[in-house]
Length: 141
Ligand code: CMP
Picture 1 (tube, rainbow, N blue to C red):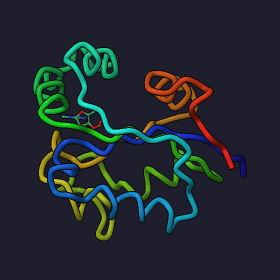
Picture 2 (cartoon, helix red, strand yellow; picture 1 turned 45 degrees about the vertical axis):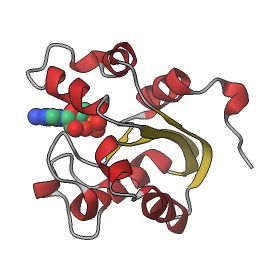
Picture 3 (cartoon, protein in one colour; picture 1 turned 180 degrees about the vertical axis):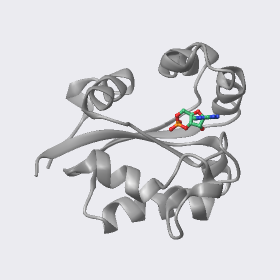
Picture 4 (cartoon, rainbow, N blue to C red; picture 1 turned 30 degrees about the horizontal axis):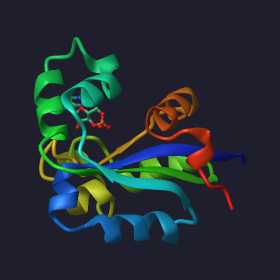
């Protein structure tokens, strides 16, 4: 299995719930390392750019409005099979469908306020990490 990197965003709902530490602890307990991290409040342009692939979807406007409703934590996470492992830890996009014990089952309220974002594949992960972090600010160790 290859060592991969993936982008995680702890969304405004989870930040408001004071759950940053609990979510980071789940990554670490699963053997994933946080190799870059910062808190930021996205501008509308940044959120629209990040989610540009969803621009034509009916939920785009609500998604962007939600993502700029408060600060978020952006992270690059590294480890064996990190992309799939993170998706497993997060659970299904819709928290109503998320398996018990997953981050979304435990912390999310709705499909928009769904606590976390995680890259869905290797190409996306590369693009999404680069969207927030220059290579010089990602610290493998
Ligand atoms: P995320 O992983 O951040 O990627 C896109 C986001 O759009 C998704 O999580 C959800 O928060 C949000 N979203 C809202 N409605 C839908 C939908 N019907 N299908 C997929 N994503 C949705």
